Length: 265
Ligand code: DGL
Image (cartoon, rainbow, N blue to C red; front, side, top):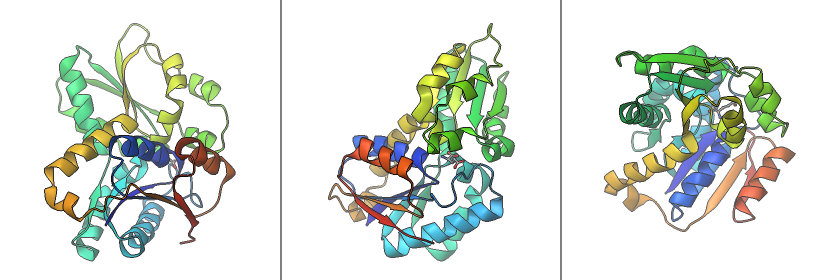
């Protein structure tokens, strides 16, 4: 059985690149919902409809044992509903979200550094769910800000420059030191632009670093799971629609070491 990874597009692919570097042995199937990108402005109903169609495909056709949701928009808006849906329809399969590993990472940064200000950068839906902010609310004297960058995932998907757009949000207090979390997996692709624009962020949180480590420990702790996972070092990429920019990144990051297919769901 395989490991499924799912996102609207390039963000998840970027996370998968990092997962495969850390855990190269396993067989991966990545589904990029290119026909419906960007996810950031979609309703919960649309997100649930897309996710369940894709999960059904990944579980039934691609024989995935576990699906990693490399998408904050889904993980913050419909994760509990998805968990329930998987439990009811595929009781022997698993899903992993992205919020818990990110929050664990931020909490350890807060503990280890004397920083009281945390800023989250995300899509419209992620920021307006306030899930990340709520997770930190019970910590003493932590100030949380949230910055919604509703066009950034689309700029990245279109292969356009992002620096000027990110600069239009440079509203952090220059006298403070921040922990900055990129809570849209697409944003890690342009992390150098974020570093230029927000010098008062002293510690950056990148999910393409967090998720591979989390998955590694998750697999280590679940030997029953690793036993059923096949280990042929393979990767398959499925898109719901072809896009030249997506393909450029795909070949740039993975050479030609994968199978590719288009699947309209
Ligand atoms: N990469 C996804 C996320 O982390 C989705 C971005 C989008 O499609 O708007 O939220």
